[in-house]
Image 1 (cartoon, rainbow, N blue to C red):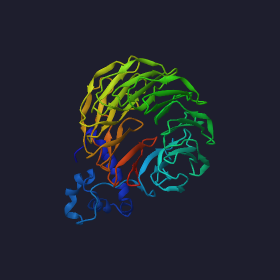
Image 2: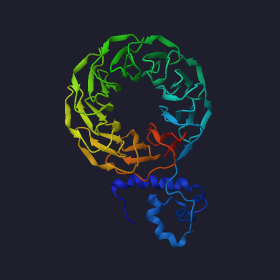
Image 3: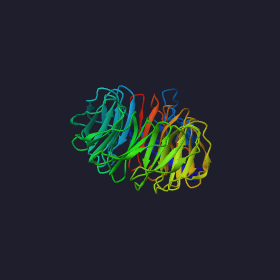
Image 4: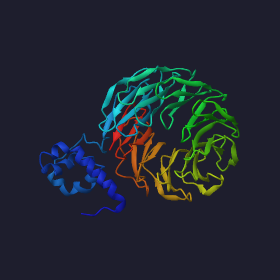
Length: 452
């Protein structure tokens, strides 16, 4: 038997685990069924490809009905329209999903079983969901202009609708200590809410003149930043919602993404004007000049875990690395993609960056130099919508418009196993469980799937 190369071993282990799971009932009846199970194993699996020819003359012939790929670990069915958002509880035991059918659903994060009844209350699509840091509560925001608070264990509604916005709620977020929630809306305002009772805190956070696209709490929860279609950011007191300083002006087009540095001293923003800007995280004052280099809108930004670097992805098909203190560009332009960069994230140790693009590929990059690590990670056949590192940084999961989820080696970028098919619509979101043993995906086909 050939010994798998180092970069193949994770894939072999996972494929072998799936083989045993898939055929568990038969194998438990006797060891002879291990060989016979090969005939009923997906033909694109590593186990089938390596062993089948060795035993083909002793196996039954299966003419049809065998999938070419391993199925997902679980199909979480129940929604009747697109799944727009999913989140794991902090301990990984539960998953919440929000859908175009106006409901949320709570699922067991291990078995995929539905927990309780559909979480009814909203009267329009659910745009965004989040668990509280301790996992006891869930917050949701909807096109119906309201938020709702739910029990994170049972899915029961806590209190009534959280009313106040007059247009669609686009983003929601718990404070780091879970006592408050911030929301951003197309009505041009942000709002603070009590994260325990759902009661409104203070008055609407007014100042923007167009819809709020993104919000973020500082790591200590004392401040909130919001980014808007009106080309500005605003800084707010994270306790009472009072405005801090003046409108943060500098961009010349809609602000699409914002992030606090890990220590809360800086804010980075990305805009459709092709630039990034760095701001003082305490006062909101602009620091230095705009970070120029991109030639089209900036779609995504992220700080490195140590806060020293920023990565940005753009519609100009490139990524760029920046010094978060000086704003200086680091290394050369990160070229390689042939489509817009839709998602970026740093590995947990900060040594590399993964990007997903509309060119159907992912790429790994050295986060110190910006140089590409290996070849394009090919396999998807349409836009890569979402990427995530496992907590230990050894794996990357991606979800695509081609309806598939893929697993990759997080160090060298090679595919692990085969594409995980099962969804029949675009995969809009992916996430790892906190212990890294499972991934969840949400799709426009109205389902979630849990993958081992």
